[in-house]
Length: 335
Image: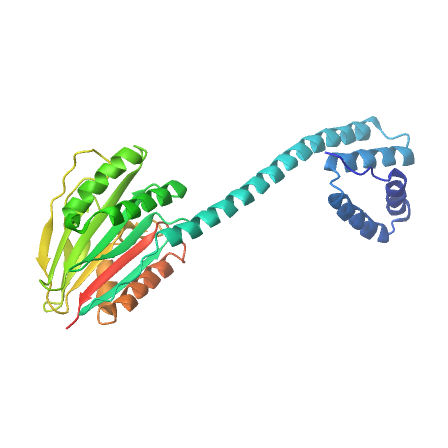
């Protein structure tokens, strides 16, 4: 690296002014000298070298031990200078990478954005907050002529590969015809897509549900996804929404069992990812019962306010440092 040569005579005068006259103004001038040296990309070892030469001119008969110690310092600064250059290079590369990831995160938000539909008699709330810049969770509403589809997925693995996988899931799902919108068929088709196109080390859990307003039913299937909750308004009780199935991509010929439940007025369907159920406070995992207590406390509110308050509660418990992506959807059949 090309540098500007230091003025030895000027530095020597500053050093003499401080050592001989003990003039404090020399310290200020030395500080300005250092700032100028940084601007001129002068390495630490060059400053040490100039210091040694100036000291030798002022005191030609330096003891051998002092002279050797200065040479030792010079060698140490040479290594320090090389390490500093490497560190600065890595910082530049890190900054470039962070900029690229920021652009990728913005693109992910655009590609995976979903609009909350307006369904008569149904109150919908949804929230998805990434633990890092990129979101490994994904949710999507699919409105058809007769039904509302709700997709909720979680990539086992984070970062840019997870975001790309989610984009593939989104656009594959949108390409399926309406005749193939049954939850079990959706998961079987997506499983083949994932098995063929996603790295074998990466798996995706997914829940797909379909609400039919006319029949007042909720059909669903799961690919190894976190069980949700069903709230019975009449009994003021919760039960797990259990559904078995292999994670997407585990094998090419996986099949998925479809379940169906009748939805009564005031009842709620709560879907979530493991970032909710595996929330940690210190070394302790939050129990599902604690999650239900928070939901129950707010269940009388509009659906969007419920999921917002549940997120705020558990975010505060973690000092707003999420360990995993937090995603929750709540559907309520209005009275």
